[in-house]
Length: 92
Image (tube, rainbow, N blue to C red; front, top):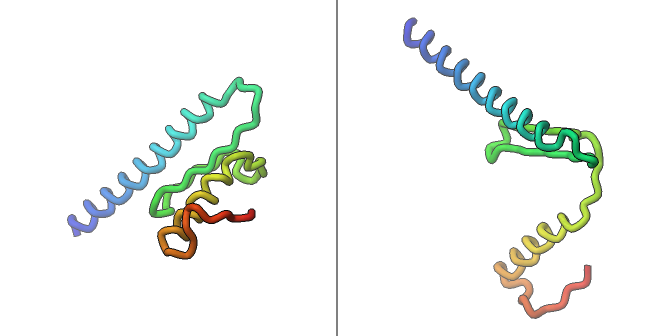
């Protein structure tokens, strides 16, 4: 019985610690973007997908040059699989 109580407390403390770290991160980001003459959106997801943080997460933002990164990853993946070569021209 005591072992169950200890395990439950450990789990509660772990969860509350994770939430407080997310809250601290959100506060830090809010502090950085406050007072700026810009609309800033941030979305962060932990590797396991369990922890997320979203600021203006329902708003849409222009991708601008951000999309180039994903295209580069896709191209390098195709090169690695032998489907294309780096010297190949690709129309996008």
